[in-house]
Length: 185
Image (cartoon, rainbow, N blue to C red; front, side, top):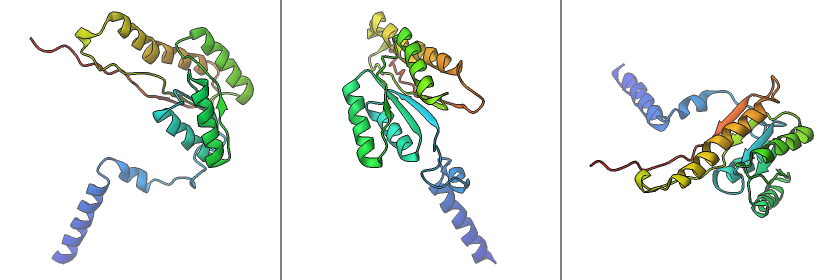
């Protein structure tokens, strides 16, 4: 009996160590088949020309979502779209947008709504970080960062939110606000 008990404990410890970052719940939860999680969802991703936004766009295209990709750099967005077409046979809708231009946001939301209907998932990924000490960062830089990372994100979320239906349900914000605060004296 003690050997069986030891094996059970060893197995539980192994499972805990393998899934200690909460992946265990994801592992045991029932999911749809791969490629079906976001099928036909309308997913709008800002900051989609590189990095996390690009990866997220590729994942959503592969999953079968109707994907809108936005960033300031139209050429980079078109390269993302070409890559998705080549890899997955589906092309995201390219919508260049400087999210700090509040008036352009309204036009972009109109464009997306007319073409796709309400947005189901809005990924607010546009942003940048600042790695200087706060005491060494000019106030103008801080204002630019807050405009890009906060005010424009809230503004776009509010514009999209006004057009949501009961089926539109998810927002994802990726924050880039990083400062090194002043040294202790």
